[in-house]
Length: 288
Image 1 (tube, rainbow, N blue to C red):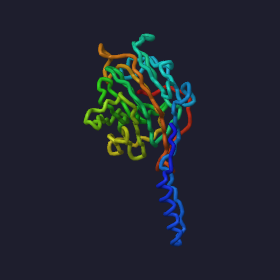
Image 2: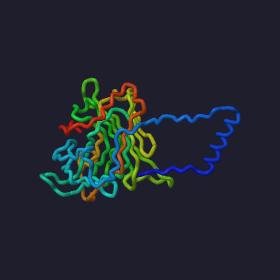
Image 3: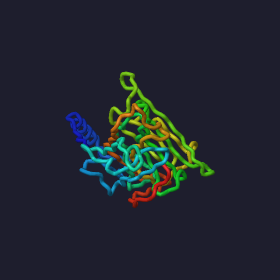
Image 4: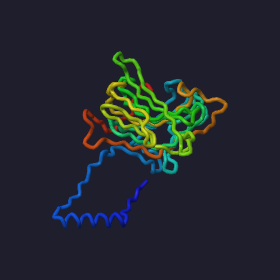
C-alpha cells in the first residue's frame, strides 16, 4: 500500500515564483516543516505469507464468556491476498458447534490512535469485533475499548462501547450504535466493503469513528480515566448474548478480512501518558 506523490508542474512554477519574489524583496525564505502529529508505533499490513507471531498471539481457546458458542483455533486465521482472514465455520470441535479465531497483539500501548481497515462478516449469530483490552489485568477495573462490534443480524449497523468499573468496582459501560446512508440515500451495509475503524484515545476522552465520521465520544464526565496499556484484539465470536445464536437463516462460512492495523502515538506524547510498547508473553486473559 505505497502512495506515490507527484509534484505537478503548476506547483513547481508557483513555488519558483514565490521563492524569487521573496528574495527580490530582500526576504530570506525558509521552509518550515511542521512536525507530524502522530508517530507510528505498531503496524501490520499482512503482506507476508503467514501471520507474524512476533506481533500476534493466535489463541487456542475452548471456552469464552458471553455464552459464546465458538472454539478459537489458530487454523481459522490465515493471510490471504494481503489481508488477515478470520474464518468462522459450523464445524463442531470438542463439544463446540462452531470454529473461529481470535488474535491479540503482543504490543500494548496506552493512549494514541488505533486504526484498522477491515471488511466484516454478517449473518444471524455472528459477532465480529475490533477492540482493546489490557493483558493480564482484572476486568473491568482497567477498562476495555470496543472500537467496532457488529450484530450479524443487522448489516446496516455497527457499534462501539467503553467498559469500566465504578467506584465500587462494578461493571459499567457507555455504548453507541451507528448507521449511515450512501450518496443515494440508501443505508450503508458495512459488510459489503472495507471501512476504516478508528479510536483516538487520550487522557481526557476516547473518540470512535468510521471512515472519518466520529459518532461516539466519551470523556471523564461519563467514564473514569482509562490509562492501562492495551492490546489490539481481532476476533469473530459465534452466538452469545450480543446477537443471539445462529438459526436456520445463518450462512457459513463467514470471513472477517483485516487489511491493516496501525497504531500511533501523539508526537511528543500525551500529557499524563505512560505508554508501554513492549511485547509481553502470552498470559491468562481477563474477562471479555
